[in-house]
Image 1: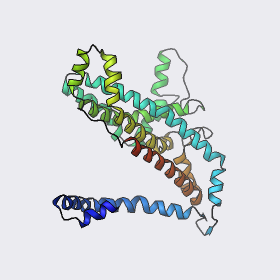
Image 2: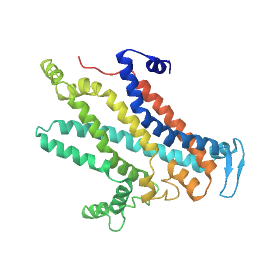
Image 3: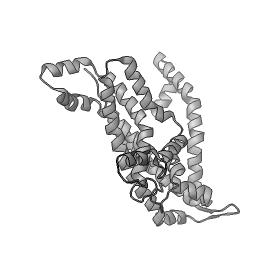
Image 4: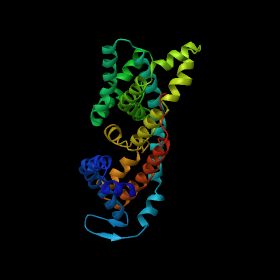
Length: 302
């Protein structure tokens, strides 16, 4: 903050340029504050009230205690963690492998076409993606069970099974988010100088050694970035679950955001929903702080 006021009062050309930059981002910053921080403040305020459509009553920390001792809330936390653990590592590993395979393709146009194909699910509506995969998973006429039938294997209840529903939802999440990670890793791979690989080859390093001791360390910032972003998106997943399972069977796929949505807009328990939103915000804030700590040091070439 002291540096900010120093720039505003500065008289050098550099200070004037930085001051102009602050003014240019001011509208976006104001929009961000209004859209995100004002609802957050409202949620914090509502979390101290037992709210109903007719009247509200101040109850202090009662809503926090109620949510903290709610077994369904902790079930949704466990489901969300499981969904994140099933999808995020797979996204990072698969995106890294796909990016390396894409970079090995010499034909630029073909490589760009494949990159675009991987990126398309990301720009697809999450509701549309959920509907597509609901059809693929359909136990009667779904594509997956038809393929299993051709192989002589029994049909599966992908979204109706207590044990299969979370892995099935994780596949949807991987399909939707893979393109973003591929784009990040592809850009990072293209920025690594070819001289590094030539020097490694002269030293006798093979493809595996070059990847393990050269490519992977240089991609560390991007791996951390993708992991944290996907972690945040994983904890915010809603659309796919709402469209495909709505938390069924028997709450086996109910995630935090879906439970928050039900409390707020189905049962009109805005106090409990606000507490859940605050808990989730604090957790994601901790993740953001970890991201900042990881990215204080950057990798440079040279």
